[in-house]
Image 1 (cartoon, rainbow, N blue to C red):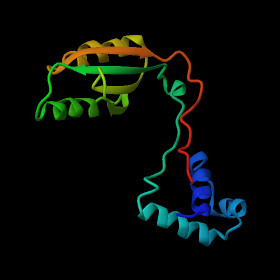
Image 2: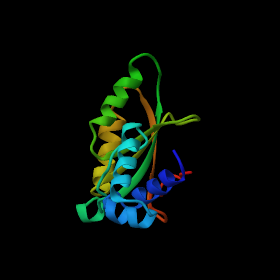
Image 3: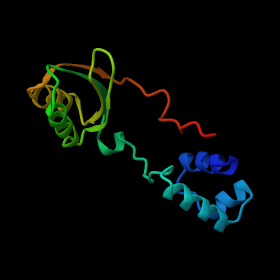
Image 4: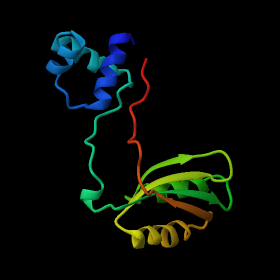
Length: 151
């Protein structure tokens, strides 16, 4: 990966729908050179895919929260059962395993507080391996998910 690849990735993270013509103009390359570089970055797994960014509020998802989950017990298959539960919940948009007191951190979007309450009390806390959850409701997102530092 060279400096031009880094610049290309930076541009694509800001707007992946930018045409190869526009990218070529910005990076002083031909559209075909941009296309070959993009293809190589995709084939090597540096570019994992492309997505449309949606406005959660316009979709009626007015509550964003982070939920820390502490497991009651650990063991073979128990984590897999919890992960399977998490993957079936459309409100949970990302999940991380953590060091420290909490075992998992979930980022969720819900329609309202009632839906968040249901997710916490009737889905997560009902799972036999969950000891406790700690939720934090997002009041305002100061900075959007930023592009990864490239180069």
